[in-house]
Image (tube, rainbow, N blue to C red; front, side):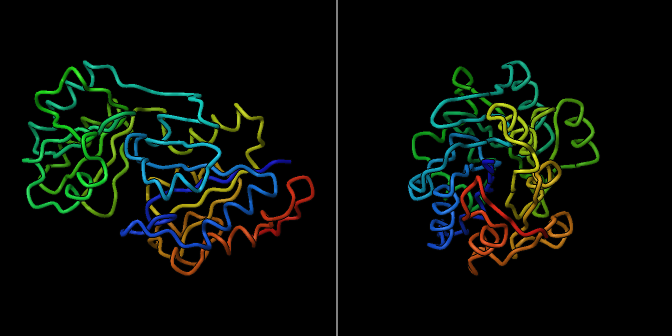
Length: 271
């Protein structure tokens, strides 16, 4: 039977300098040659999945925006767009509570630079996105949003957290950042939707990740694999821990699970 392997991007395939180990590329190609599917499964919304070296690997599909968009072989299977009134209400609340927000959608990312003074990450976004990164203020007619990413270093989370949880799932990272995702959407729900569409048994799924937003993947996948560079809290939630990104961790884990064998005769070892 075909297997489906889901890969987080940041800290799993790409490092902070957008470097991809050749072993990762080779491993993904080998698992596909064996008849298995390779998916990106990322917290980034689709507008920010644009690195050409990454896309050139040739994934069978992309689950983006924490499960808010699913593509398979260049066709969109699912997209969750937030209602404009809900976005407006959320933006107003975030600004009133000193939460610097990035609105993430299918075509654009939106942010007000003044909210991120001194944040070097914004320079990276500008470099990678160019004209697809636009201001929140003044571009309301262009808002097309599936999730938010927020810097919370100046926010009173005792106020912000319970309010947002009424309408969203919150993924709070160890750095002062929170991802704000529509209820019912996660990387895990994305995997389940892919399995339902393609007729894949959930036991034949493998999820690679390194961060808190990968835990919903780990909760549903048949095999959950934490990168060696993951935090200890993430490693504890995985069924298998491989080597780090820079130590050929993806290749070693794919080999460990027998995913280079032909799909119909794979004899993957157990954890």
